[in-house]
Length: 323
Image (tube, rainbow, N blue to C red; front, side, top):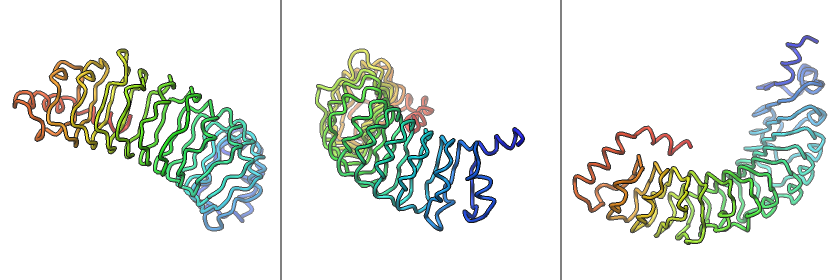
């Protein structure tokens, strides 16, 4: 077999191929080299995973998204070399316990399914670094997640979670996204997560933030579309914060101390109840300030100065969206 053909079989994306065809089995399921397999929307007509797939022992990446699958067979445990698994956009309501046998798994993407619980066996995924459970039916934070101590990125957006358990042992967590849920309190436990640099709690029901949490290493904090009335400085004197998004809340005042955050470049306080901006912000390092100029009680010169600063640094608008 030529080296070029071997490379082709090592990384293959199949689109619109009939699973019953002989070529399908010969070229794929009998391959001894296949490492990457993307079957997005390939199996959706029969909505069944061919049993031969579980014989591909060399696979390290498997994408079965958008195939109308209602279950994952226990035989998936035979794919012991898997490092990335994507089951998104399938109406699967329950995961098999044997999923915890995929000990090398580093990324597990389970977006837009029908999950409301996770098997406790997932705690055995000691190398898992990324877990995406967005657009499911979780009403409670799955407690097994707190045992995934290697996790670096956790996404739980668009569920109905109202509180977090103690996740202080998830010390490798860097990115936490729980937007559009039902959180009512800002979880103080995350102050113990020293590697955490990205937090998105937008679209929840958080009404206040206690002074206790300290988030000195957080660079990006999104609290848009909550019910926050007070925004204290919880970032410390050596804060790394670069973007603070607190638009669409109930803020009536903002702490002058925030102006002392030397790395803060983007501040969104638009669509709140603020009538003034502390004078300390005039000398801050903030490059972009989103605010309601028609509501702020300030001199025309002050407003003009801020608006000029926003226009001059309009490139930061993209930073706010994509960081």
